[in-house]
Length: 157
Image (cartoon, rainbow, N blue to C red):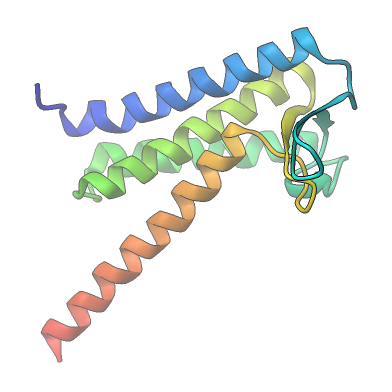
């Protein structure tokens, strides 16, 4: 079965959203805030953190602003998806990651007033699957768009 342009983006987003929200549900059920379980001692831990800020816990008083920014990101992704500006499957995959991640974190902010983080590599601030989706999707999207742009410049010149 071939997925349509529409369903590829939203299938990725919904899959990430489900995994993100389910993992956060498990964390809230099994751990107390600040509790940490070593998976690989001193390298990777599962640590329950309630992040009231943005990346790295910065700007903890910006709750409403972060919700607005997340909603703008969601609207921009939906706009690009609906206009079918991005045609490659990889670009649609990236859109799905960004959309699913933005939805996952905005749901946390609306439900709890903070984002649940739990992936703790000890050399980096604690994060979650939604954060990973937004970051990986955004970085890969930039790579694919720069590569596409560079290819157009070569054919023009």
